[in-house]
Image (cartoon, rainbow, N blue to C red; front, side, top):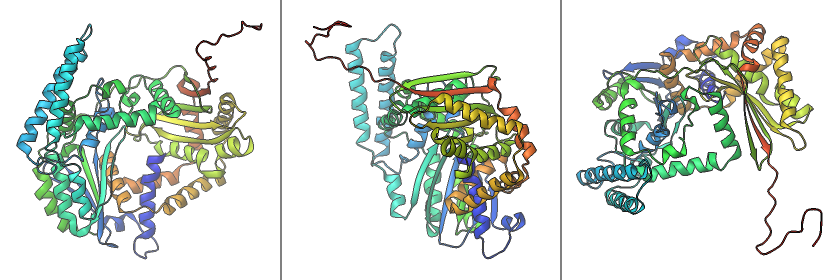
Length: 517
């Protein structure tokens, strides 16, 4: 539900803050939004908000972890990191020399990897020699790199909120600048897609590997979530973690990352949202001057392996030195399904604050859980995904109790109509929370870009809200009966492992069982 909260929040906030109008409709909103498509296929959605002399943008690339190839997972995430490493003219003291040095890095790494991965085992002495040659090549290339120059230029010009993220469905880049730096933005943002450089790739790869160790390998819940997701998706690439599998991260190369870039980081596969103190007549010439320099082949085909229907329940159990945790998920259709918003309503009924069903039942009344919630789209929305439940047990209670309590709430949804009052309350609470979330230009830019990318029309922001309002209690009951099928369920559990007995100090003798020394 997190992604959808963001997109609903922005539109409600916009409607609540435009001028002093009492009401606003799509026709009025359209006066502020302009869509421009460049000759190379890049689509830009512009929204005028002149309240302050700033603007925000979001570049959304229609490629995420789903596009990673088997054996090279983590490439999408690596490209997110590399997009901040500069260009031939930004971040280099001598590009011709650096280019030759980077080519040598790839040549020596390929030789090192070929020996390391050799069938039947490697020659240890040869491997050390090849690794030394690779490390020397990296050191030579680093001599020409100007650290963080891309970011420093933008920092010196007043940027705020520079960041990016890689999800299963997409990769996003965003920050804000003063309005009088619009041309600088157009130059900088277009340059990193026109002239990418895989600079400091292996250093950055080490950073990503450490991210994985911290967030997944060293975290019990991270391990559970990863294995639970992989168990639920046997065929579809949603089973691939966005950070990548560790064995793949230890192999992938800058050459592979560059190939990934040239396939997916192309204008026809990207949408930019830009929002703030700007005028289309000012923006469009800059877009054409800078972004039309980028060549673009046709958008890549969006083909993935289809997840076959799940025909039996599945379970993942981890024994960890942590409190018990319970996950339960059911396959659901993608965001294109007519009932998409019904899943959101069900998640809100279960999870929206202290009046939600899961909180009242599992946390407040029965005191089985420290926290409990439902979510409607894990790990993404673009393809069929999971509707899930999460709960962390209270001390003295078990995962079995949580499972039974969640099943009770599922049975209520399937067999009893939600009251008109409860349904209305959920909708009212959701809208109020969204309005209070205090979105800004950045959030609007992201949402405009995402909706334009996913639906081909940013106006779906409005239509989604309309659909949300039209959900009925009959819809909730019907979809619940379709969704919550035991054979469609995947369960993930952390059971608290008993501490291992400490080994006696060396030389100490243990008494025989049942006797004394």
